[in-house]
Image (tube, rainbow, N blue to C red):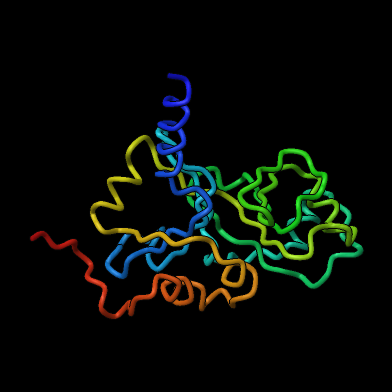
Length: 196
């Protein structure tokens, strides 16, 4: 009996989309999400949380660290900070490769993590942080059943996360690169779901 319950839970967990890209369909007209690529961090029967990875802000990481009073003498380059979504825009997230030893880190995959604690920013400023990372402010959130409903209404497609798109593709090319992961020509995607 216990084994059957574990198998049912495992099958339910596999139906969730954590560690996936949500790729906005061309017809999605919501200004927050039009042509967006969202890294889906958590998805369960209670809802979902994701970070938009292709909406740069005008804020540079050096400015953000200065505002926070975080040392940045060894900051490599001056990356942009992303708009992760409309919910809690004051909350920061660092998506990175390598686990590190930082507080408040969520493992998404073998080499993909999200850290929400300030210590990772200090490590980045000292040149001791992850080699590949993006910083986002705010997140996208969906309530219970909301994301599933939006997927059924043809607003989103999903595909496994690709670190090349996440860390190596110029921001203005990420949506098109993510659609290519789907193996479809986006010019042929309908904006409204059809019914037979």
